Length: 246
Image 1 (cartoon, one colour):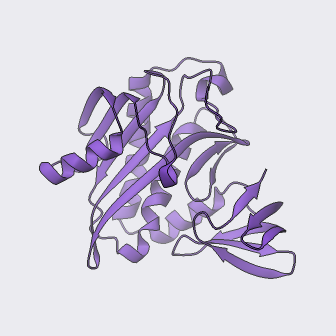
Image 2: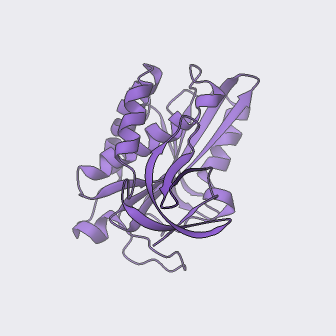
């Protein structure tokens, strides 16, 4: 087992990703090390967003990976395996778990987990990856203006042991990471695409040109979302170039 073989716990960190990146620069950290915090005072989300989490209620972790066999051009595979690992873990408890492209985890129409992956790249190699995960487990009330947060406890009515949940999550992530290092890229892509939120469903979207009707078809090798519009045309988008209108 790689992921979860070493766990370092902190009561409070500004950000697990920031601290993990510091550790990688200053120490020889074993692959699969998990940095876990009970609370983050400045938890990082995508593009500067913050992640709300009540102290001691959820899983706030960052994982150190050294995916040396993955080319920078294929780095979205790391996002895929982390998303799939979280989805695998949640799916054992809750039905309706999907991946909202590129890497939010949804249960029905509510967000239960977020991911922030930061890759260090030199020339044509990925030196290391820090996979940050915020997974809502036991929080029952959310106070920020985030539109649709939900926790496992809210969905199931159960209270979860966070240590057990972390062990199970690490095992699910480790299985998916093994697929990555075993070069099972086609299987990873197939599994990720099949798990996409609102795959092949006609919905309203918004891009720089305005709103349009379309349906998600796939994700290309670079991680760009492919949407068929009712023009008809196939449009491709990078992260933050298109929004769902929920």
